[in-house]
Every structure is written in C-alpha cells, then in structure tokens.
Image (cartoon, rainbow, N blue to C red; front, side):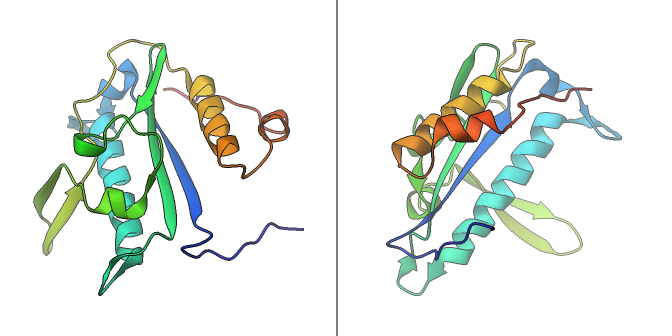
Length: 165
C-alpha cells in the first residue's frame, strides 16, 4: 500500500536534496561548452527551491508546509550547500529559506524572469571523488532524528550508486 499523509503546518513534508559538488561538476554541461554542470545543477535547485517557497506563499507570509535541506557532497565531506545567513544548517523551515535568498538574478529569455538564488555556483569541492553514499546516510540520519522513518530499514532496501560520465 502506498504511503500517504496530510501535509500541513502541523505536519510538514520534508525534502532533503543531495547536490554533487565533486570535481566532475566543473565539466561542461551537455552541449554547452561555456557552461559547467555545477551551474546547471545550481540553477535547477534554485528554481525548485523558489517553486517550493511560492507554493507556500500566502498574503500573511510563507507558511511552513515544508522542511527543506540541501546537502552538498564532494571529496570526503558532506556539508550544507546553502549560503548566506542560512549556511551550515542541514534542515530549515521553508519560510527561513524563502526569507534568506543570497541574491535575485535577472534573467532574459523569451520573457523577463527574475529568479531567486540560495545556492552558489562557486561553492563546490575541487576533489575528484563523490561520496554520495556518505551524503545519503547523513540524510537518512537527519530524517531519523525527525523520527520520520527507520534508517536501517530504509538503507537496507536501497542500492546506493553514483553515476558519472
């Protein structure tokens, strides 16, 4: 039977995102030689965070329907990938993220589009390995601290792998 639960301010959903910050993220992004993988990932993650904030925005402010964490891994370390006043924190209320952007980017596409940024494109590890399994285990431990599920049960049913080019 699929899992289901009501999402509310008293029972928020939790999102933990793992961001590869290894040396391979300096490689070109797709067919764009002037753009790095890290830039594409930062843009996608910032867009996703912006959308989560907008889903929770009401007239009186941002309602805390979600707890969100963004962990970066690269080399031998796993750290919070968020910057600015919320840096160093593994898990935050969505209002804390929404109220602390690093910057507002002006972008020109077919229409004007201002995007919000929380992740920096330059806060990457330069080492060559990607300890994704360490990052997944840290996420699982953090979720277990919230008493949302059994870490041992979750990890025993998952094969952790890292795909690289």
